[in-house]
Structure formats: structure tokens, C-alpha cells
Length: 198
Image (cartoon, rainbow, N blue to C red; front, top):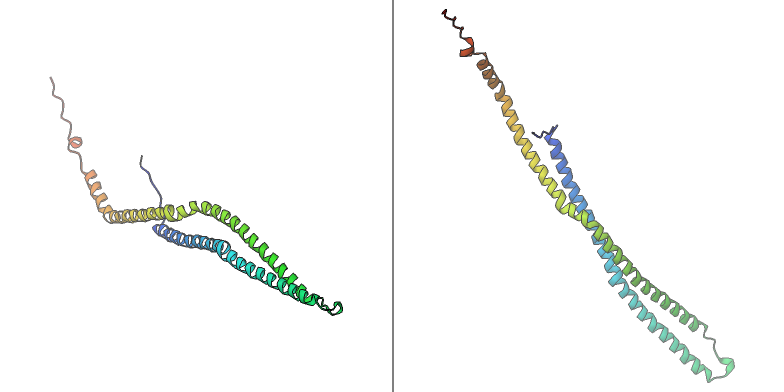
């Protein structure tokens, strides 16, 4: 049994093939961009941010130590003088409290950065797994489909060329066949012989 297909326009297939190529290019670029952005965020959380907050933690730790030592030294020197001349050191104590608060915030941010780094790494791994099928489609299946469209277009163009050639030579061939069919058959046109009397 022959398989038949009705094709309205070869140009429509060519246009679809061009649209498919544009889709592959755009989708691949978008996928690459999203994966690149994920890698950038992973690096930012895993390397850049911990290094930044660790450096700030060390700086504030030294600052707290320095302010505490300065305050302690002043208080010791002041303790040898008369009681009425002793200072309250309000400014120094406020500076120490501020430095301690900043140090605690920095340590909390360092801790949160490490926690979010683990979360983002896990979610990124899930996302990459989910996009594997899309990547396979963009890199293998759709290019194969595009190649099949190319073959279809070439086959249809070849068929159209043959059909056009038959359209040009077809009437003469039909006319020749009709002439041949008009010719009397030798056997059918012969007159029957009379039967001989016995």
C-alpha cells in the first residue's frame, strides 16, 4: 500500500525550518546565560562573600581587642588618682559596644553566607538535572529534526521538478496513447468466415 502526503507549500517547510533554527539558537543562548548566572552566584556565595566577611570579622575582632585594651589601660591609670577626678569613659564604652555589635553582625552574615551557599549549590544541581533533557533536545533532537526537514525539502523539490517535467511532456504522451487505442485490433476487425456446408 503506497503512502501519500499532501504538501501545500514547500516554502512553508523552509520557513518552519528557519524558525526552528532561530528557536534553537535563542533557547541555547538563554540556557547558557541562565547556567552562567548560576555559576556566578555559586562562586559569589562560595568564594567571594565568605572571603569578604572573614576579612571583616578579623578586622573587627582586632578592633574590639584594641578598644578593650585602650579602655582597660585608661581605667588602670585613672584608678591611681583621686576618686573625684575619675572619668566615666562613656565614649570609649560606646565605641567598644558598637564594635562588638558590628562583629556579631559580621559573624552572623558569614554564617548565613555559608548556609545559603549550600542551599544554592543543591538547588543549582537540581536545576542542571532538570535542564539536561532541554539541552539534549537543543543539541541533538532538534538539529536532527532540522536535518530531516532539509531532506524533506530536497526530496519535495526533486519531486516537484519531475512533476513539472511530466506536466510539460504529459499531453503528447496521452495523445500518443489515445491514437494507439483508436487503431483497430487486427483480430477484432476481421470478418467472420462463413461456415462451410457439409
